[in-house]
Amino acid sequence: MSIHVGKVLKAGNRGKRSNLVSLLAAGAFVLAACGSSSPAASSTAKSSSTSGGSSGSSPTTSSAPIKIGVMTNDTGTYAALGTPLRDAAQMVFDQINQSGGINGHQIQGIFMDGQTNPNLAVTQAHQLVSDGVAAVLGLEFGTAAHAVAPVFEAAHIPVITNTADETITSPVNPWVFDLSTTTRYSDQRYLSYFACKGITKVAVLHDNEALGQQGNADLISQAAKYGVSIVGNQTYDLTGTNFETQLLALNSTPAQAIVYWGVGTAPVVIVKEHAALGIKAPLVGSAANTDQSFLSQVPGAVNGMLDGTVPADLLKHLPASVTDGATIQSFATSFTSTFNIPFGLFASFGHDDASIIASVVKDGATTPAAIQAKLNNFTVNSFMGTIKWTPTNHTGVQLSDEIMARIVNGEAVPTKCQ
Image 1: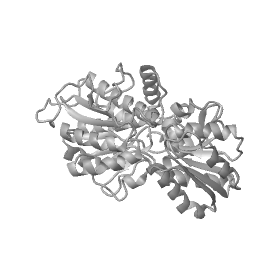
Image 2: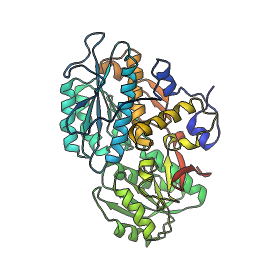
Image 3: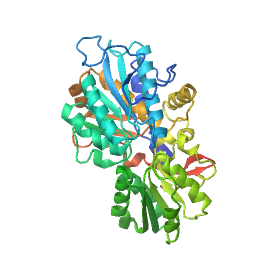
């Protein structure tokens, strides 16, 4: 019997937990320490230096490397998200290879920097298909994830994405699996919190990309069920540098809270301007805005902000009773010391993506079709919470693992109202 991280943080409930760290540790892959270095950011492919093997073919012998594409955005407005995701995936692959590989196979990571450019991502997706990858992970930029999904679907290559935009997996695409919490669940957690606190009037500020548009639509569609009225709605461009006009417009409404959907560089400015303008209605954001790499950019201004988040962003609040809690903390500490960047949501994506791929390879899946079949019936509890993929559901984290938190002294702390 073990403790489920997300439920402990909210209500102290006990439940069975098949921990992903334990799953790989059982296969002699100790992921808590690693001496790897970050792969250089590039708009072209870069293979993991520890993996070996040539590009352009799938495994045909018992010792052939298994090629895994890693598509992140290490430059551009999503750089703060893509870089830790890439580094954590590299860390997992390096540790596996340094321990002898999996069933005789080394894992060859082929890394792509999409530069927060969906058109470039499509070009890179075709390159990965030509390279003969067995699976692809990453894709934290929702617009790019949507752009490349048809490429991998046509090639019958499974993809693990990390976008909160649920439309990437609904309706189900047999080749696309998402690890992130969804905008629908995040909005439900916000609305549940508002109902608990007696907040009935809410305004919205969202970007015009896939994430922001879907987050806004989900909030509007569910608000009335919780007795909440949307009293203001503003949009912004992902590349914008000043959002005072939108914030002042929302401040002129009777909003008791401002939900803002967006990730990358824009929310950093939004949080700072919200504080500088003295707006009393608190900002309410998503798990991406609870990541330490984000919080470290807005010290002071971020205090009092509310976020719907996941266990990965609340590691300091894991109770001692959590099974494998020490291993989880150790991986996070090792990641930070290795790459000199904070461990948080997007590093946990990289860890979980790579570890899930490793676990199905360990179970005998070495081709795209075999990996897809394993992922199609896959359940595990990880840094993110409960992941349960079935042939009819490829959505990631469940609502029960979404946690409402307040930022206090630059750190996320679970709230009493959930």
